[in-house]
Length: 280
Ligand SMILES: C[S@@+](CC[C@H](N)C(=O)[O-])C[C@H]1O[C@@H](n2cnc3c(N)ncnc32)[C@H](O)[C@@H]1O
Image 1: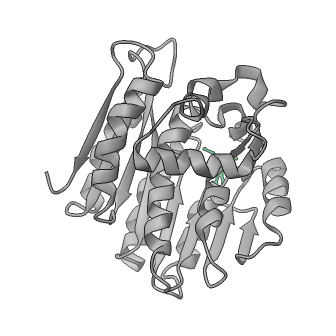
Image 2 (image 1 turned 45 degrees about the vertical axis):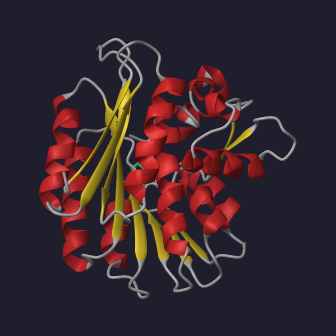
Image 3 (image 1 turned 60 degrees about the horizontal axis):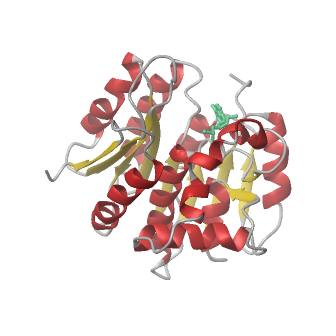
């Protein structure tokens, strides 16, 4: 399990979908003065260098963030995301990519708080270095994110955004995340929860969205982006994001963005998207 390093995949099509949605959610929570917590159960390194090291090996970002970076006028949610990536790359060259904690912190205020969990010692060290100081209080924890989430709920300010973004290297993740979300909803039913999942030719992956929907049957929204035909040789052919208690603004933002994302990131005629929710 600890072989996984997110840097290999930083900025790929799956990161783009995940981070566009994440930014919408953080912006929604930060629109009110009231404080909120951001809890990341699988935080990664926080920030990635694209031009050297792991990310430069497969250059997955070329099929992801770079396509948006070079695009012209974009729908608002996508434009906002690119603008944020640009703040990390002020010299007009795409060199760094923000991870989920970096994206969340960019919109958070001193009254808010980040809780970041990362099990890999090397990524934990990078995360700690990045978040040790700064205007938003942050606690970086090198322990299991599922257990960490349980211990933090319900959150003191009664407003929170939780990102559950496992690497799915082990089948156990499909089970543990369902358990973690079930317990979390019991402790804190009104939180905003976001789960990222891979679309790969594996039964657990295909069944996950339906299983997630049973946890909060009346208040979920799901967005999926398929970039290529599903075949065993290529593994990840798309990804999805499942949100419990989505803000009312999310659906229209995604309805506007997903067709463009599909055009920009699609690799063959099988490229497509899904946007569906409990209200359908
Ligand atoms: C998909 S990556 C996270 C990417 C990050 N959320 C982002 O969007 O920038 C998953 C991370 O979870 C870490 N991890 C795996 N199992 C974990 C666990 N049980 N608790 C905390 N972190 C874990 C891995 O080391 C990896 O860095």
